[in-house]
Amino acid sequence: MTSQYKKFVKLIAKWPLDATKGERDLGKVIRDKVKAAFESTERVNLDSELCNRQYASLNRLADNHYKNKYKRSHTSTATGLSTEECNLMLSSEVLTYLKEENKVTHTILRRTHTTELIEYKDHTPVLLEEAIKHLDPKDNEYYIDMTFGAGGHSRKILESSDCKLITLDRDPTAFAKARKLAVEYPNRVTPLLGRFSELPNLLKEKGIKQMSIAGMLFDFGCSSMQLDNGERGFSISKNGYLDMRMDAGRDPNQITAREVLATANEQELYKIFKIYGEEKKAAKIAQTIIQARYMIKNIETTEELVDVVNSCCPDEIRLDKLQRPQSNATKIFQALRIFVNNELNEINYGMVLAKYYLKIHGRLVTISFHSLEDTIIKRHIAGNIVNDVANPVPLKYLSPTLVQDQETIDYFLDTPWRAINKHVEVPTPEEVERNPRSRSARLRAALKIK
Ligand SMILES: C[S@@+](CC[C@H](N)C(=O)[O-])C[C@H]1O[C@@H](n2cnc3c(N)ncnc32)[C@H](O)[C@@H]1O
Image (cartoon, protein in one colour):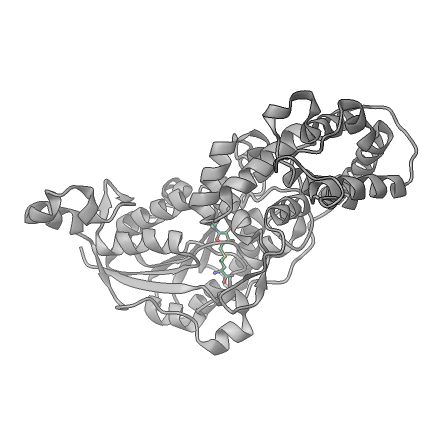
C-alpha cells in the first residue's frame, strides 16, 4: 500500500458516515470518490504534492481545525459544505493517481511473492531441557514430535537416547528439514507431512498402531521460519501478501487470511478478532476493514492490515509481557492465524490423539503460548471435557444440578491423565533474555494412566 493510500484509509477511519446529511455528507462523498477512482481505468499524470494538499485540507476538516472560525452546529461529520464543494475537496485526478500508484506497488509485491523460497533463520527451541526431561526418551521406544518446525526438540530427543522418532508438521518447509534429519540419523526418523487431524491415516500407512507410542511432544504455534518470512504473510514487520497458511498451499481448499478479510462480514470479523485475538478494539477494527473493502479495496498485505489497525488505535502504545513496545496489530494477526489454520480445533484433536496413541505410562508434553491454547490442554488433562472436546464452560456453570450430582461430576472429571508437573513451567529469565519469543511459553506434562 502506498503512503498516500494509507493516509486516506486513516482519514476515512476517523470520518464516520452521517445518514442524516444525505447528499451533503462529506464522509460519504469521500468514500464514493475514492471508490470510483479505484474502479476507474483512466491514467492521469499528477504529482503527489496535490494529493498531499488535498489530504491535509480534508484532515483539517476531520479534526475540526477551523472550529473557532466556523462553528459547527452539531458534532457529527458536519462541515456545512454543498455537494459541489465536497466534490472539489478530492478531485478525480488525485484519486486516479492514488489508484495508479497503488497498482504499481501491487505489481512489485506480487513479483516478490513468487520468488524462490529463501532459507530463514532457524527456530530456537523453547523450554528444551525441561521438555526433554519430562519426555524422558528411552532406547528402542517410539516418540512423536507432533510439531517438528526446525527440529530443535527432535534433534535433542534423538541425542538423548537410541529411540525411534516420528516427526509431524503441516508445513512442507518443516517436512523438508525433517527429511534431512532422517538422513543424518539413519533408520531412526520417520518424517510425516500433515496436520494433527491427518495423523491417524499417516500412521496407519506406516503400520503404527494405537497404544504404541512412549511419548508425544507438542510445541504449538508458529515457527520462526514461518514468522520471519514475509512471503508467508505471518509477519507484522515484513511486508507480504496476507497468506498465513501453515500448510503453505498444500491444501487447495484452505482459505488465506486475505480471503477471510475479503469475504467475512463485519460481525464475523468482529468475532474472529474478539475470540481468537481477545482484541479490545475488535468492533472498530472490523468496521474499518469493511469500510476500506467497500470504499477503497480489499486489505491484501500485512502492511495494509497493520495500517488499518493503527488507524483504529491512534496514539496508543501497547506493551508486551516484557514491557517492550508491541505492534497494535499483534492480536489481530494472532486471531487471523488461529482462524485460518483452525488451530484450536487442531489442538483439541491432538490431545484426543495423544490419549489413543500413547501406551499406558506414555508421556505427554505440551508447550503453549497463549491462554486459548493452554485452556484446551489443561481441560483435557484435568478431565473437563465433553465428547472429546475441551469444555469451554467451567463445569460449575454448565447446570446447577451438575454440581450436586457426584456421579455426573466423576464422569466429566474422568481422565486418562495424571499431571506430572503440578503447575505450568515457564522459561527462566535467562531463557527469555536469550530468546524473547519464549516469554509466554507454558509447559505441561502428563502421564497416561489408563
Ligand atoms: C513452534 S513451531 C515448533 C518448533 C520446534 N519444536 C523446533 O524446535 O524447531 C510449531 C510448528 O508446528 C507446526 N504445526 C502447528 N500446528 C500444527 C498442526 N495442527 N499439525 C501439524 N503441525 C502443526 C507448525 O507448522 C510449526 O512448524
